[in-house]
Image (cartoon, rainbow, N blue to C red; front, side, top):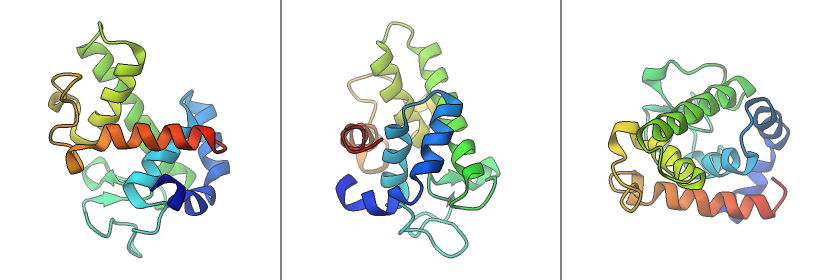
Length: 150
């Protein structure tokens, strides 16, 4: 999927790299979430909501309850979504201080989808995520994006 989505994700490459630099996060993670959440924007309705989840908004599908910022394809949106991701990673770091940084990152990715309180163990962190594979899928996509320009 990451390879299929790359031409669409590449439209936002400069923004992704800028936000990643500002926030101190791997741009491949942002690219992977954009790929997973909206297939690089191809699965957004005209109003920016998700084709399959109208509660999500924008490339990174920020929950409407979070009060989305900016347009669905804007740098403001990607900044907000990345801040939410960082908040989730910090929540996992607090809850699981004995996990390795890589495990905490993966847990934060799962929490981006289902919330920090829903991540119970490393082995089963994807249980309850979209498709029961969200973190594994995003990490796999991120590895691919890392090897392909991000």
